[in-house]
Length: 254
Length: 181
Image 1 (cartoon, each protein chain N blue to C red):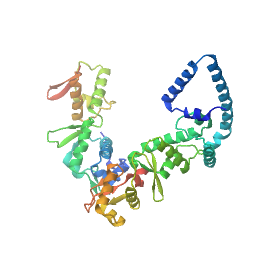
Image 2: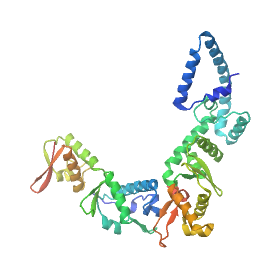
Image 3: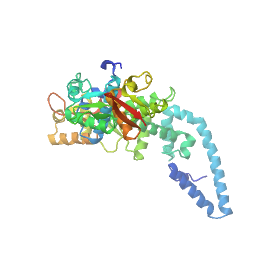
Image 4: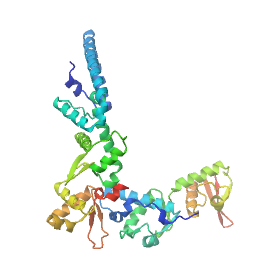
């Protein structure tokens, strides 16, 4: 049986990976004459047979995997149980064969596209339900993605270090598409804003959260610095207000 | 040129966002904000076929800088920052040293210059003299985008051509003319 671990470890993403594969093949070939060639032929034959099995599986189930959220989730669990990860980042051997890794890879790319394209509206924090609507708006009637799909895809993106994470605000989930972490305090302030049309003031935070003024100022400062919040100095009271574009529905609807 | 009313202008959603009227302290946010203001001003001026902005008048009464519904207006320092940005992009030319009024050039001066010069070449006007009036109001140029163009904007475009050696601006009989080279 072919060495799945070696094959999997040999997965290279992109041009660098392809070049490494080519270089490895060359080294293997140049190692010695006929014996090496025979071994190579043997492995090729075995890979060929294995590939055929996988192709059949892909033909039978790939469509179901793409179209059925439940089947997809179950397939994930099955793969995890046998120690296989089909959710590879690149168009690898597994992802091409099963179309599953490809599915999440493509979903991840679309998530990046959608969040980047709308980043001027939500400032790098996009509600998962808004993201879901945007993603499914672009797909055919039979191919909707689920929130579970988004969570998995974002988790994959997070592992790649793309700066994507999932943030929980009460009972809302948001995809954070900028690097950096939302502190617990920042989270509390945003929850407060969420209940007030996307806006808070320092005095409102002090009252509602019962925090010392320095603590409130520090968090609001952080939120402005990380471009989550815009400031508004035009209130009649004269107090500066802080607004979160990602929590203002009117801004996202446009 | 027809003047469309400000009423059918499609105001962007951000115009209803109160912080839009406060110059943002965060550099990244401010960059987005200035981009949005520049786009808004150019789109509005293009929609209403406006070429000139009197700064004080605009600040006091233009619907561009005062959203009555949310009770927010921009102040002079903020406007200065926006106008500086427009100048950098080539979409604004000051008409006076005190910066009291300016031309909003929603096509850049270079773009107008290129359009005028290519027209001159196509129609065999090189080495002949035309009046500015002919260019903006003549029958021959009726189908051109610069037909009806504000005279000051046209002059800016011609001065640009002059700098590049493609035209020479002349005065004759108290009319301004241009010789394309």
